[in-house]
Amino acid sequence: MITAERKPLEEIIDYVKPFKRILLLGCNECVTVCAAGGRKEVGLLASGLQMAMLKAGSSIEIREHTLERQCDPEYVEELVPMIDGADAILSMACGCGVQQLAMRFKDKPVFPAVNTKFMGGSQRQGVWDERCQGCGDCLLGITGGICPIARCAKQLMNGPCGGSCDGKCEIGEDVECAWHLIWERLKALGLQDRYLEIMPAKDWRPAGGAGPRKIIREDLAE
Amino acid sequence: MESFEPVIVAFCCHYCAYTAADMAGSQRLPYPSNVKIVRVPCSGKVDALHILKAFEKGADGVYVAGCLEGDCHFKNGNDKAARRVDYVKRYLEEIGIESERLMMVRMSAGMGARFAQVATEMTEKIRRLGPSPIKAAAA
Image (cartoon, rainbow over all chains, first blue to last red; front, side, top):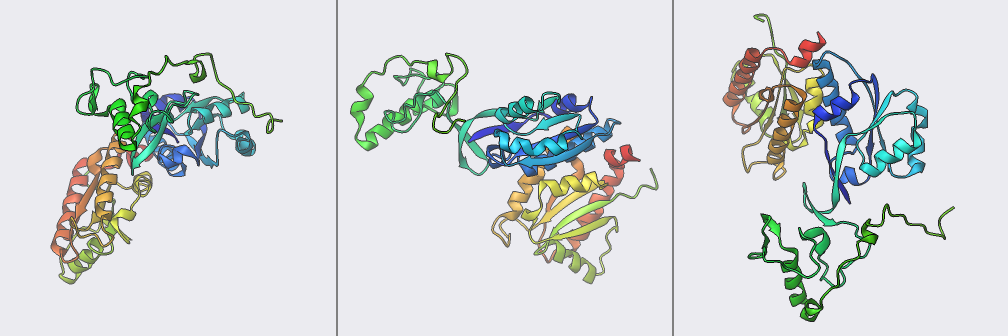
């Protein structure tokens, strides 16, 4: 999923303080699962904003709404009846959702209330780790299901580097060395031979190096 | 300020603090009427939004009262509540509300005296802090 964290309240207040009526929008997908921008977080932010603004001597009218998905135009269309009642939109969705809103409602200022972080997996309740950088050319089939792009600080294709010590990365004791994990996993699977194959330098064009990426499915696209 | 009577919301677990409040009553132990009790099935049921709404609606102080460590009827709802209270305390500071206005306390059902003591101490603390800045701004 795409993970996110709420921005500091101070930054959000700076965005919205010139406006009187705010449409605060959550998203029922990834940001709900990572407890950053679902219906509950919308309620918490609305309440916090109301109180902070009141304390600062001003008032703000906040309408709360949570869409099934902010990154799909079908759901964004639901907002049409309520958009006139807002001076600005504050979105708790990931950057995709924020941009979808900005594209649809061209005359409304749209502000992000969260920082979109990474594509990650949940390790346990309340803990998410980065697992994928969307490089466009998945290597997991040859690296034992462990990604050296998302999980190696140097994104090495043939690791580990000299900074790997007792399975940990030199950047921090709590960071596992991806290449150590890859080696251990390949060994457990009896696939050590794969480790000996030198991987060529990665082509970063599918990773975004050739500009914004796009997928067109001819059979689906209208 | 002398006439200030704080409004304090106490979210009390049915299995401990709520029964302790009953116990305090049975024992004729006085505690301030400033404390408004909301009975919950477990302190772990208390959501960040409940606490925040209490402040938004005019509470000067809030506390969540759960079972003693290891005694939760639902395994660990009290520990979850304690972590949630810590989280909301940080958020309150961001909003501009003193985090001392929120507290997590633990007690057993038999601790009537402790219930009365906590209610008294919290009331005194909030009285010293004065009205919630939100209530003051709304006035």
